[in-house]
Image 1: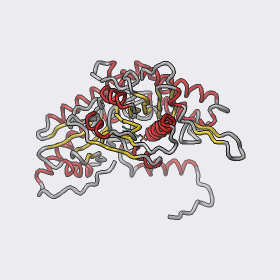
Image 2: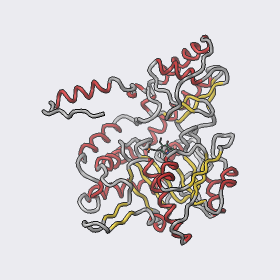
Image 3: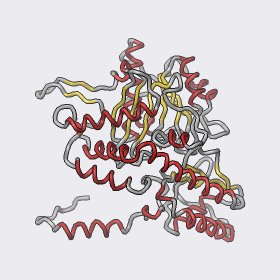
Image 4: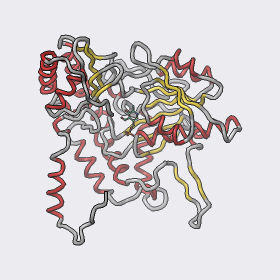
Length: 415
Ligand SMILES: Cc1ncc(COP(=O)(O)O)c(C=O)c1O
């Protein structure tokens, strides 16, 4: 729809007031009513991220190697922190990216090109084998790169089923995917078993730790049983891990890592065929926000191991309290045993999607699963204060649905 740009520019105060007013129609995420999209850490985390972002508001990370040495230095630090956290061997390499989708896209592209190099077949059309719970970013990448995706059912524990994955592997399989955790159930896939499978069949294993990468190591440090999911597991060739989720850094910020330089070398794009000479990037994006890099660097340094552990303690206390509140409501259960703060709530005596409709009427943006039917949420400290109200509204919604005439849920299951 065409719209007319104002002829005369409008005043700053008026515009800022209008922006604030526009937000009035959004989901009230500040009060925990969005079950995904936004994240919050311990006090001070938000402010340091915001201020560092503004400090580098104009700088372009595309020019990190030529013009903005400071951005290059900060990217190296942030990537270095990730390599250390993920037990990377000597020679492992990483890249700062704009988000989980870009990190996954790059890992798939790098695996494709590296595999073609190994096979000495520049046209080889590989396939990717993954549990049905893997993120759609893999399909997006595969669609763009004309690769085949084979999604197989998860196991009864809502984790990847290595046997089912093995059955889907053939001579053209180039990549296996496991998640730490998957978005659907918040369960960490059996990465050790997938690593063994990858080694046995000579294929690349990618671990999608976009959600868990920057929180699971600290949840483990404070005493929760988190299985190995990183380069400590033989067979893991690459890892995606988002800073802008549970690293508590402002968007856009993610990282992708490779076990060795040889694999990483297949990631770069180098082009000479235009008047301006050599154009070389490691990322899919060209221009990138300098603010994203500076904010991640500042946030990680602000929190340090102690800050991340403190955040992990509060997150897990919230999760544990919430899970017991849900399990004490007759007829409700949690699907699987989530390892972090993603939970999927099912019911055996009420249509949980009808309950979601009632909750939506009370201002809660519903997160949903289609199969099995569930209410779905990915919680951070934004949700600490809102859990009690949520549980009360949930109980009331269940009572309303039980008292109603049993009409079918019409709510769309949408990410
Ligand atoms: C497990 C997992 N991987 C990848 C992504 C994609 O991340 P982004 O939305 O930053 O592209 C998400 C997003 O929620 C996710 O949950």
